[in-house]
Length: 380
Image 1 (tube, rainbow, N blue to C red):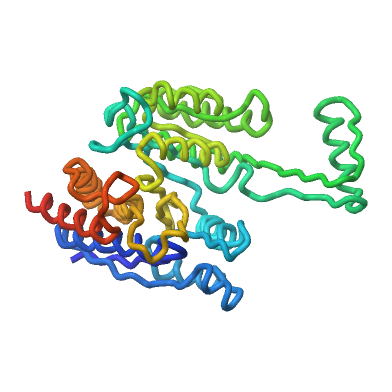
Image 2 (image 1 turned 120 degrees about the vertical axis):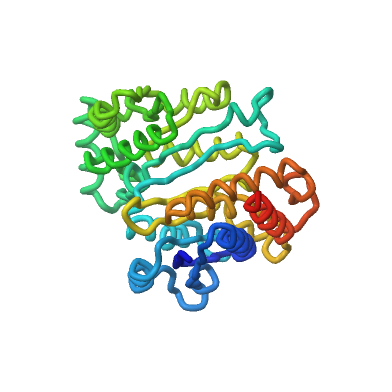
């Protein structure tokens, strides 16, 4: 029997409830496909932070890297903690530590799920967004100046305006903030190659590449150069550049046009939330933060929904689907496909659904139904 070891971070709010259902379904897949998973649970979240001031430490990250194949995360966020602290100190810190440079987001409308797009069905909404995960504006480089302070930053900004626009701009020293985005040749090359390899695997004819090169010319000029350079190694796959504003429009009008979508970090963050709505809502949207040669992390993209904590009413399907993505990454591709098929079959049958999908079943009842369906399909 194959064995895997996974770091389990239940997190905040509904996190522990939905992650329990993901574990339940993975166990069912293991019974079918002859593997087992050992979970090492890490109590990292708002409660720990409020009690000790600690979140994700270097020691914990090192231990996970040494002991575990992947990380399974429930949710992050708590109204008792200032926005940004938990996200930066858990999500971003983990992504950067393990160099999880791929954010993988399948946008797939399952049978039996309502989409807000009129006359569009499962055959029309079925694509994957490959989002760069460690560069762009998420590197966090920036500064906010306070009135009467940090005059050297004002001089720097004046110089940048002069260099870029050829004009002198008056900056009076009142509150000013700026943020810097970064694209590197190495960072662009590896995410672009990942997208082309995915297109090759899925037999996609085109990789649609998102940017805003008409305005952010330096960053996305290099981005486009690297697409052309990497794309030359895949003559059977075309690539098409599309501005992010046009992309938002075409995702609503013609989602069937897309199979593999490649985006920088910031734009991918926006596009994937639009995609989540196309596929039926946040309760059905999984995500993976992937280092193909290291430790990856998998999570639902929804928040911690603290108002639902302890009610056993949250939709666990995104978390279950994220667990399926995790299985594929650690070599259990057949189980990933089986779980996604089981999710779709449970939805299509319409007997067990949570409140957000028009039903009245509990979180645990949905998890039970998917686990049972995994076993049932596995016997066929």
